[in-house]
Length: 63
Image (cartoon, rainbow, N blue to C red):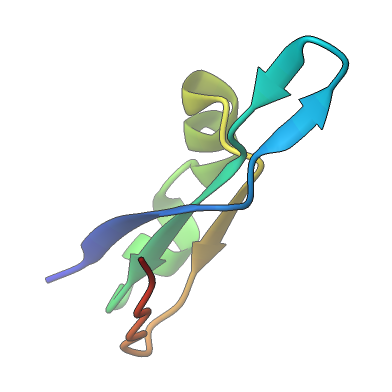
């Protein structure tokens, strides 16, 4: 079963404007899920900076 993780990237500060960019990671995707899901729409709807999709298992340790 696919897993979804959110990886926050370092805070961006431009003057008084701040943004916390993030990447959505979808791993353990099998079969048709790699081709049929609309990941570009997921990126647009959530405001993510990127969406990474893989059939591998990714272990991301961060604090």
